[in-house]
Amino acid sequence: MTLGSDVSGLTTTAANAAVRGLSIVVPVYNEAAGLVALHQRLVELAKTLRNRYGLACEVVYVDDGSQDSTLSIARSLPAEALDVQVVSLSRNFGKEAALMAGLDHAHRGAVLFMDGDGQHPPDLVERLVAHWIDDGYDVVYTAKANRDNESATRRLAVRGFYSLINWGARQKIPADAGDFRLLSPRAAAALRQLPERNRFFKGLASWIGFKQIRVDYEPAARAHGVTTFNAGRLIGLSIEGLTSFSVAPLRFASLLGALLAGAAFLFGLSILWEVWTTGKQVPGYPSLMIGVMTIGGVQLIMIGIVGEYIGKILSELKARPIYFVAEHSEKRAGEETAATATERTAAE
Figure 1 (cartoon, rainbow, N blue to C red):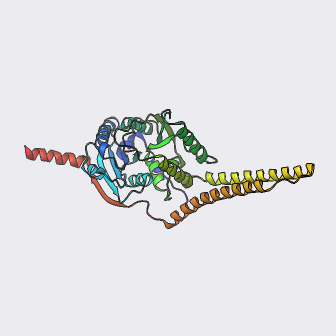
Figure 2: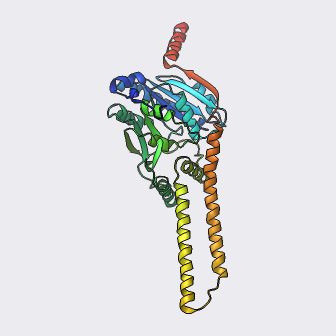
Figure 3: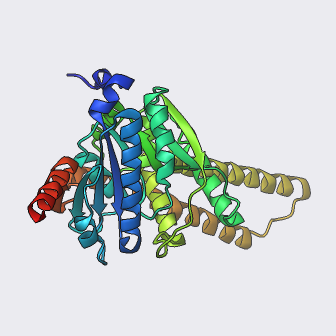
């Protein structure tokens, strides 16, 4: 029985990159206001990549249970210069599931992931593709160049998150890295083979290895609507990422328990020393209550951490599908161009 996977046959060269092509996966949730403008930018990008590399492109829009007209607008988008797939999930499964759905439905070799809010600039994609085809990188990931426009609290929280999740990890997750990244055909194939249902895309894309490079960029301002990622949801996603990808919280709980045990031992020695040297009895009620409440609180925190991991184990054992597709449509660029030409001829 083989416990590994050989994806060496999918190594990309400049010669076969054009044959394999590029799939652009765009998860969308209530992005009706800006979807048409984003699609037009992707059409221009596809034309540029075809002219420079002979690269055939497709875009896979994954509607993650939108409540507005996102799905109907996505259905109407023209397959101009690139194929268009629209994958509509049966409900809102979350961004991780939407990314996986896009990866599963991507027909081309390399896969590029980008958000549907327009903050991931399509103009940068040409640079990512150049690193893949010209420089031979398998994973080209992007990261915020700086966080000067964010509050000090958020910057501190982000720094703490990456410090904790990378604590003791063999494969580090690059700080400030986002989901905006390109995977070569073999990197995409490797990611598809990871079986876990509790997925943390940033961690998994780093864990698979291969030759990786970082590209710093400044996210564009959101042109339409407001972000759905408020502080509460970001905290929830951070907890989800930590418990899905890392055992650092368990290690932290063990370390905290050891520190408390050591502090209690030293406190006990200090009491013995005071009684032995002065002969006075040390009042025990306040110190006892503080000790009991401290240990009790720490125990509850540890139980909560362990509970999160037990919940993840239960989810994996249930083996439920990560997502359900309610609707799937596809348009081919060549077919739509031919159909348009036929209509024009008939009209003439």
